[in-house]
Length: 468
Image (cartoon, rainbow, N blue to C red; front, side, top):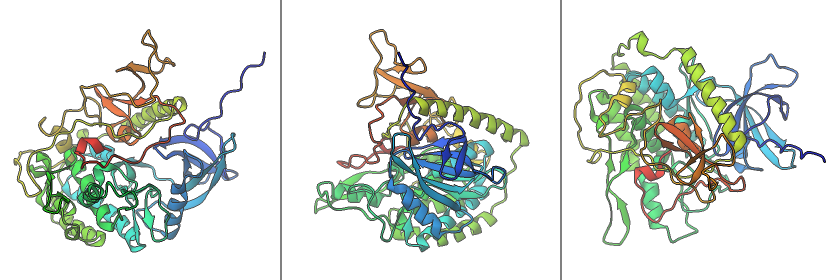
């Protein structure tokens, strides 16, 4: 009796040596909801510089043509350079688009901040680089629509910032990716005006919100707030006006943003980006100039050398994460949900003043040393501690009568089967996982389920319902 042939590998787990167009896969580099990234080399020129090969999870995913189109228009120091694009044919016959881009040996933004503890001047210069990348896109009448820490890489050897993942972007003439009312993106980074529009048009299935450059700037403000405090801003109270229209009137900001650890010039620019009135945010070019000017007024803080993470430690950590991620993607497909993250916000609106905590200027320390009223203490780098086990997803695998899951690598938890990984919170949330007791749990679900990129709009969300 012949043994059944092994199943073909999914795009998220290609064996090393697989050929994709003119490229050969050399290493697994990461995985998101829509694509897997590999380090690859050109066949016949293996000694040349590697590329980042991004392969679509789903056949004919239109995001990849969109990203290739935008990158082909740009040659910017803070956007990865497009090298090639095409389609890879899976052994089952489906065609998956791919993009080959400049390889950036970088660290995701929030992870970089935890490792290197930047001061306010460094953060301002870093944010200015992101603003310059946004300026380049906005000049092309494009909007990124998914600015967040996971899509910002800081290159190891020189600290240059790269804004990545343009697949959710829009530009003049681009086709629609998702149904109304909201475009693709990560909920916690959406602007108040986007959520207000969704609430006002929840019964109008044909009316879509048009993202503007000011939406990108608000998302950059959320990113900056999360970077320096470890906590997201939250929508404040909402009310209906005399015409029955929903209005978002304020934001609730973390106390740590008003502590002595965040220098006033940086705080003021974050508040400017988070303004409830889009026109007060200005333009990306104006913000970049303001950030550079503010950075020159600040004296760099001294950080003892033994407080900085050495490169070898980071590389060992990355190797561990990659190994766990490779195992996970080999075993399952992960859907993108909206996990609840137990982050707490301080009361008060955008003009509130918080406690002036004494302490060093280092913002990495601000993120991890804030009071427990603002941020639960992580038990693992990047992980917020949750005491409540995650709820299983619809269609998620369940343990049998003896409490065992289908594979020994899976964990039975709260009547569901999960893959326990060492992903940091940012990575965990971006692939639909849930943090529990310092670890990231990925749901074991049917591979036939298509990842969801939308959230309910029946009411304006609180911050934990749209966490990244």
